[in-house]
Image 1 (cartoon, rainbow, N blue to C red):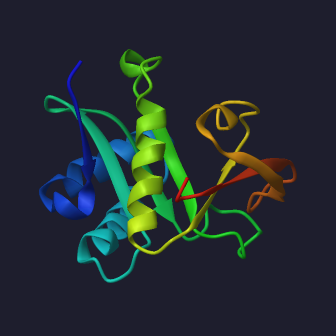
Image 2 (cartoon, rainbow, N blue to C red; image 1 turned 120 degrees about the horizontal axis):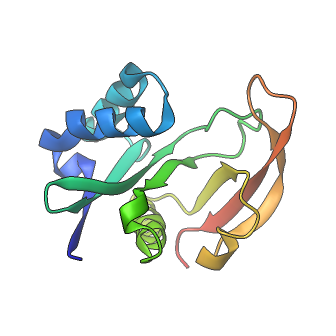
Image 3 (cartoon, rainbow, N blue to C red; image 1 turned 30 degrees about the vertical axis):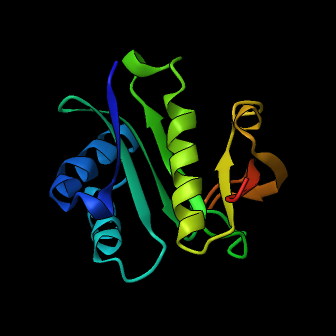
Length: 153
């Protein structure tokens, strides 16, 4: 498997395809991804950022970094969001590679800490993230786990 990890700000011609792919995976309105990826491509600020992994011409996985991933702890920013790896590419470390790419890239852009919101209980710890706190998602009653990672290591 030969994968290419892509920073969408460096490959703006992939923006529409990536927005459609994220929309199909997460069911968030397409316009939300289009707007966020367009902001990333403009390079006006370190956040938002979007990344994909290409296997040939197919998107095998991706993730984004946005200010807040729809939770009530607005002080915990920025947030990794929308991490998804196609079933055919799971179990090969691609999610970890995408997480590492985001951390390394954001560190180079001056961001030293990232957060993420999840219901997973051990996946992110295996990739160097630490449980930080519980937070309530917008419009939900249940709490979800928030993880933190320093981008420099």
